Image 1 (cartoon, rainbow, N blue to C red):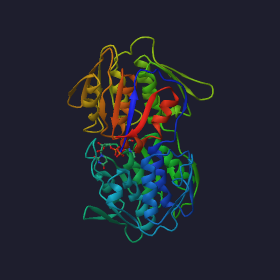
Image 2: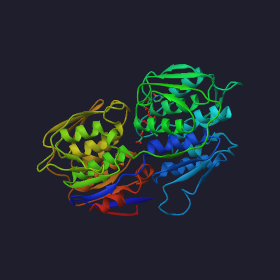
Image 3: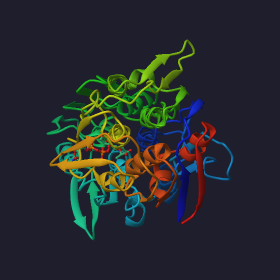
Image 4: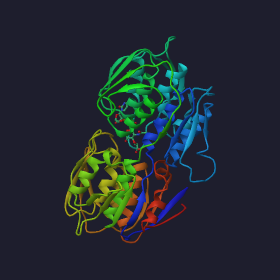
Length: 427
Ligand code: EPZ
């Protein structure tokens, strides 16, 4: 198991390119199941969850190449699911990646059946998929639960379009239903749909495959079912959460960093909160985004996570790390997941002053942090600890780095190119 040893105190500086978005690439890979021909995806990040999704599609009998062969710098894959013969996502694969549930809608739409291990919870919450199943049921799907697997069947004539409404916003729920609807009979309306940019990116690829989708980016998405979809070529949007994470590392370290290829239109809420905290942000003529720390300490800034276009929950931990050094108290409120403060106890080990009150954390800024051994618990918590360790005096060790590698494309290497001192070793 890898660990990262971080020597804190360097101010990050320089230019870094933002990778493709994990949370767009995952549904896009699942969407390839729907196509009659090969789907080429470009700008794919090289990270654990996509390798898992590639292995899952291969397990089903699809072909995914050459992305996961060799250690090249490949960022493209050709996904051909024409030979898919086993519409199932077994437990040993789903347990490492909940997003495997994203194959449910496409398998039902294209093959009329699916057997998917019911995703377990994870560190940040129970994370059920009841809303996915309820919506698919309204489209005619039937489900049995056997041995922890969901055994799903579409009606004889295929899924039927339906008028649906999600009780609360669900990102992969919206993606799953959108993918089920593109081959259903008739029209599907999804009300209270997720507006996340990654949902829109997935929808755009489906349209390129021949799907008829209206309302992408709004809370009502309408899909007219088609008989079949062709393959397509699609470049995955840039990762707004990796961009935000790099911004947090730059500002917390007191540095000055320029991001290349950041998804400028998808970062409004993050940029507003960074500016409120005193960070200096400017757009370059080449579409780059320059982010630097203010002269003095950051200003304490309250933040509440919300569905897009609100402040993203996937940036909550990283923003909290930044606020541990602000000149005053900030209130960080998490409204999306019930247990997404696992990073708090680890940040305290660096000297942060944080108290929890229900769904809020009160972060009292301290003049400085000092290095300590740290244990990652989930993907964004590990990013948060890395951000804080970079700014802490002295040495920190971050254990269970596989959490980080699931969701970031060699983040430690990117940070070292900006002047960080991070050594990867066995821990
Ligand atoms: C997606 O997860 C992202 N993952 C998450 O990113 C992200 O944090 C989350 O959306 C919120 O933005 C991918 O896109 C692969 P939800 P998802 O369904 O779709 C509850 C990361 O760090 N809910 O929008 O699973 C759920 O428990 C990951 O990259 C139900 O109760 O999130 C949660 O409290 C972490 N029943 C809330 O809704 C359901 O059927 C929002 O979940 C579905 C969800």
